[in-house]
Image 1 (cartoon, one colour):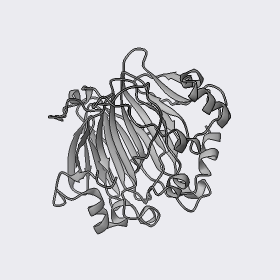
Image 2 (cartoon, one colour):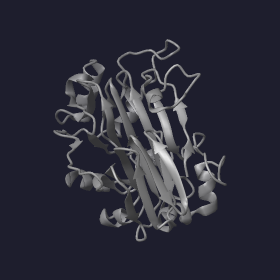
Image 3 (cartoon, one colour):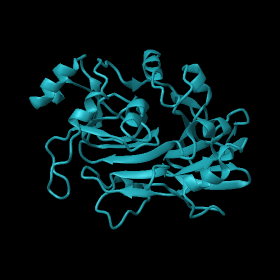
Image 4 (cartoon, one colour):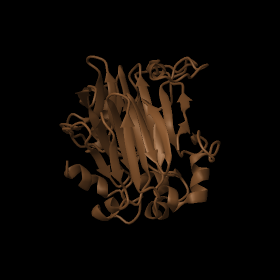
Length: 344
């Protein structure tokens, strides 16, 4: 399946998404392109085939484990468990943090949010905020925030095309100006904004901050290097991130490639982040360009990939074995985060 995109106008958004071939008129800019979403009231709609005009969650209601995998369906239920975006940061985004599942659900939300960023384009000198430069106590953090000096304790990293950053729930973070990227995350739009540079929104008002709500969500530990370091080669699959919520691989494609998923109890998504490609499975072949994705259902055992010239694909799925390997039985048990970070 392919999906119709959802376009989001943002105060910090730009116009780079139009260079990928998308028309988001009449919006003045597009900060976020939601490529695939199961978020309530923001669900993406199937574009092709006999399921066209159905939302992803409506398809899930019908096909359940055949779509997402039997174990994934038992675990995540009737909401598609991922949200995929393309983000154009034409200005600095607010400094924010996401709660984990346990805290989010205690506060009446569906899920927390763990995510990852794959940088598609980066202007010279573009940076991201990724955690704290040194460990602080909650009391020290609050004092520094009250003094308007939060930026003095934040860990900054320069971002370049091809860089990957894993952002677990609890890590303070922000995208800097001049970045175009793909984001893979839990199906959640839950964000606590803790600092926004005193910047007004499109109506001239300061955006709401969530200072008190964020305190219980923040990981106050030091971070030295949040970038995921990896090596890749053409027409091979390179792992970028693996956690109970998603596995993401990079495939630089220059020639046809066949994949066997007969032992994987999961859907597989191919998100194009560079060039033009095509995905063939179950007697259907669908072309995609940068910013588009194809979802291959769990019942498909074979996938063939093609490209028109060099292309890069993110291969995304949820491996149920990750729940076992991280010692969890439910998606709201976030003890895995500490263990996962400790393995990096």
